[in-house]
Amino acid sequence: MPELRLRGGEVDGLALNYLVEGRTGPAVVLVHGLGGFAESWRHNIPSLATRATVFAIDLPGFGRSGKPPANYSLAFFARALHAFVEAVGLNQVALVGHSFGAAVAVTYALTRPARVERLALLAGCVPGFGWRPGWRARLMATPGFGEVLALCGCAPLYRSAIASCFHEPADAEVEFLVGCHYALRTGAPARAAWLATVRSLTADFVQRRADYRRAIATLDLPILLVHGRQDPAIPATHSAEVAEGFPRATARWLDACGHFPHIEHASVVNGWLADFLVGRPAPR
Image 1: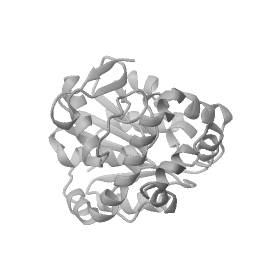
Image 2: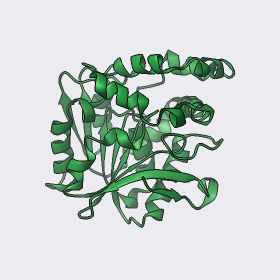
Image 3: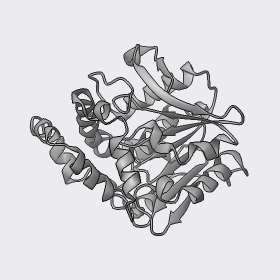
């Protein structure tokens, strides 16, 4: 798994790990969700790599990337993503974001619209609309109390939490999402980065909601939304609202699907992504 050191501003010197596959076609960057990691796209990378150059990154604070003390806001993640795009020499990219990664992708597109060709948002939570952090996130955001709760985390609890996000959890998938790089993803630096990210959600999704909504209305990019109708983490109604807010959005829905459409219905989603990202032109 390659590692590079980012350059510039607050991300200077930050180690970022990523996967890359395919050496032809447009550049596609896959952005995982909260607590995720690059390998969580393992069912999608080989398919897309037959027609594109595919990068899957570990965001700062997650996976095997660096986990420095920082303000883990959407703006911070977007700046790190831009530094990555610059470091690997990409002029324009298509972004695919899952869950919280969709918010990162949208923030990057808003701040660097000339560098983004199109966006695909899978089970995405997008700032500027009605979704806001639930009571568990608000509880974890409480200073001191969140740190104590984080210490209670263990593999059985993680398995239970992840399994609850699937419509029909498969043991092998849940075990992979929990066990991959477990020590790095659950150590003290990772817990601190996760808490810092959770604590940024209110500012980004509540306090800056109106700012995001106004900016999104001006974003003239093709957008594909993919959402499971049984998603227990981000309601399908959120994606329906988001589809109305983007000037050029198309929504696709999956039955018998929870919060991981790219895992639960990988072959269908891979086909939709290939058509959208490197196939026929996106509809206007």
